[in-house]
Length: 384
Image (tube, one colour):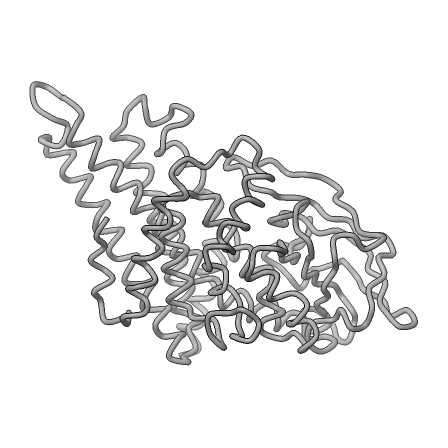
């Protein structure tokens, strides 16, 4: 599949080569992924992605198995767009390796980075990012999970929920209140290995697009002081820096879903007989397809503008929020249009567009809901 946007000046030859290589790999490995056992499928995809060399783009540090010393935003966006277009769970598997280990890449000690990042890059250790709580999702400052200093370590108590890779991860980066200051300034980050006493999976969560998700519980879970990522009380900053790296890639995954929906919609329009011609011959169909491609192209421009700016060292708070807002909301509309073009087939379980319809919905919520992105954009605009 030739993607003309790779010719845009946002990309260099290495990015174009990366996208072409991944496209060939996906065609070979992601044609028939068995999703019947989601946990096993996800673990298998992480292993495949590691063996294929793709996870090295999700971590920082060439000596640790990373592709570069810093994470290349355009690379992870191209990876997520391509993976999402082929298989939503493959995109999920890649993204969680990056998000789950991102805090360690950004703020971990040399020992932490050496212990965890090479295994993440090889697909040998599954990572998870544990920030949200039952009463603290968008409002991180309302966090209740607490970590209290106890001798040579900390005791963690509380719960986390909606945690991706929950139940299958080998380690979790957990954010807990340590009380150095009120609100978001009194939160710290800790690495918690899955076999740590006092840590348990309280509940597995099933959602409309099956992914490994869980509610976590900590009961006097003791972690050493060496498990803290970054300085005491700096956890909120670590979390926001991590999300800042990967937020644009959520928009890229949405773009991948939208491109696949457009592809499926075009095929349906061209091949579906209708009133003695084809569905594509109807002016209403052509108008719908025009709206779909306009949305896809505008989303792509916003995604790769934000990715390019971040790779140039610019602050992209507003640009990343715009990209995530427009690409996720736009992908929902494009996929809905593709379902409509398919008629009754569009809502039949197992159809590509039906799967896309379920996959896209969560992206308008996680890593900052659309309404949160609107607040970020509005506040940044007023500041400027």
